[in-house]
Image (cartoon, rainbow, N blue to C red; front, side):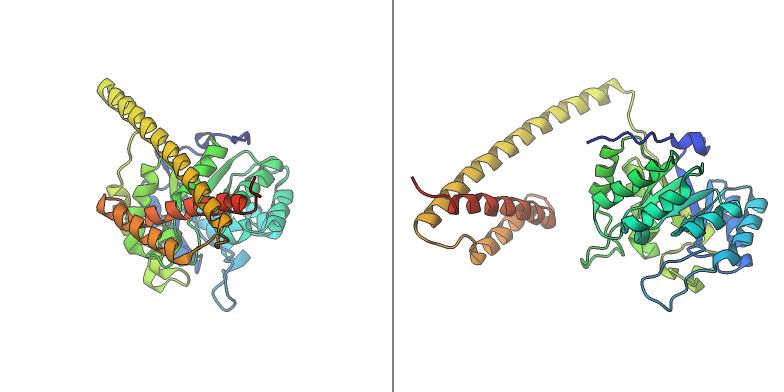
Length: 365
């Protein structure tokens, strides 16, 4: 499903000279000197297009630093004047929007904890009517594509055309090395729904730790994202929020220097021919996969008939445990990630249960 949001192209509202959009700055605006000096050092890199900082910080639990609020907005005015760069802040209420625009904030973003609540998003949309300002929307905390899509539809419904997505990863409850699991496929699905929507990667909130920023930023670039938003602080170890995931401006510059920006296509005829041939081979393999899935479901249906006719339970845990283990082991021997094989078989198993339920509930002729 593709939806026309009448999104204005990214380069129509900010000039990046054909390069990926780079947004950087501290997680929080803590003091005037901290914010202005961070902005100066980032501007000196010559690669940052927008400075960011948290003014209002929605925290999971009370007692954490929740931002300086309106007191920080004059600091932003000074940072803008000294660097000549536009500024972006997070907003969560109509009052935030009013104050941000009053002090000349150039770009607004809606955070993950706000995106998750359609009532909050609608209040923000109503407050944005008649305003011409770029709005970036982060994915909801949990992996719910419909909520993300709905947020764009609400903001676009208020007449906002300068829109972009921020992909910051998802809280899944899984034990992984990342703070938030990227789940790249959900951002790709969003792009398939809104083909002209710019997508900006947020490796800081995916990673949670500096050590993983490079690999996540590179992955975003390899997936042809339109830019990055990264947290940078002059003294990250002593930051008042998210200290572990922030980089000094110098370290951030080094990260950018090592990023590989790849072209979308190659003019090489040899490349095109090789790609076309390989894609045809993939199409053939995919056809075989679907045919084998259909054959497997035919066997599952026969299995369900035996169970029904002999009054045997539909789900047998020992058999399912055996399938999950042996298929994952086989996948590993063939060079596949066991986790991939497990996820595929969980989906196949769900369909098998559905098919068997239909057969078990049917009457014999």
